[in-house]
View: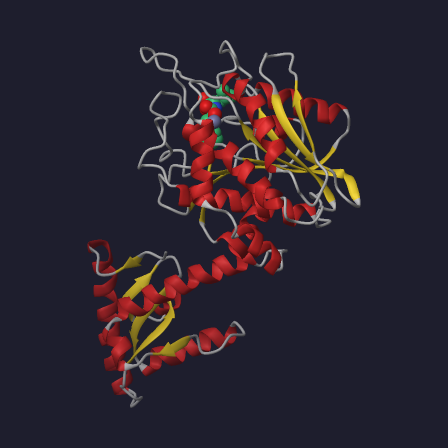
Length: 416
Ligand code: BES
Ligand code: ZN
């Protein structure tokens, strides 16, 4: 929002000078029998200064001012603007507006912000689709909570734990059940890795008309305890039972949608906490096989509303501007959370693996990195009142919409 600057000490000199000029001009105009009637107008700040008007209030961001100008000054302003091919360059204010010069500027600053937001939104390539909206709105915070409770009930999902695949095998079995009766065929498989004993789980829904074009949605299914004296419990409710559960819930909703034109691949990655292990191998193989992965959505931590409910961080490093723009459009068209750009400063999750291989990835995040959940990687990362399933529910919606929008369009990443 624009910064409203009223009579500050630094502005006093300018105001005094303006006042002096104002009086000189008044005397001058009176001497030359020009109308002495001064008026309060809304105008460009620089121009109001240039003609020596009395600045009643100014907004340095919109560069607008409410100024008290003589008829002569108004004429000068008009000449100045016409010479630049513009209109008079000021707007007369009503008595009420003139009495509250700060209010109008503050309102205008808000309007200015809206225009900027709208012109950004102009980049939107999406037209609202009622069926997509209905699908997204099936996302249910209570079901999400049940799924997070189940995933975080394992003592640990650490990739170096004695039995690092219990939760992976269990999810495989559950998904087999949950996806019964889906409108499309699917394949569920575990993927072995060289770098860890833990496996990645993948669900593939082949595309109808362009199966070679792939939309990836994923999150890490492992957890870690980095505490020194706290034992080995690593429930990882937020990091990352939350993102894993959003993916599960999204799939359960998408089960009632038509087969997509492009292929959907859902991943629950192994060993992220030990250095992005699963996603590094999977994305490297994809590149080696020249797999046509169009877009990658990464979900990692979606439950802690550290910047406020429905305020969502958008990670801008190791991600794709093209996909951030699409996610921003998905958000403004359907989900309507507030997106805030933020950086991790390093490859903080599996999106970085895909990015490194030249694929387009995007990561919406629970908050900004400075306000994120700091209980992660400890036994305290459990479901508690600080977490919000309503907040996290938006991330199920992002997943459903990412699948529907990108899976059924011919949008392609820009070629550099
Ligand atoms: N979920 C965390 C961190 C995170 C922060 C992800 C912000 C997404 C946005 C993640 O699981 C993690 O702990 N990553 C490691 C890095 C990895 C290469 C071992 C970290 O941040 O230390
Ligand atoms: Zn994580």
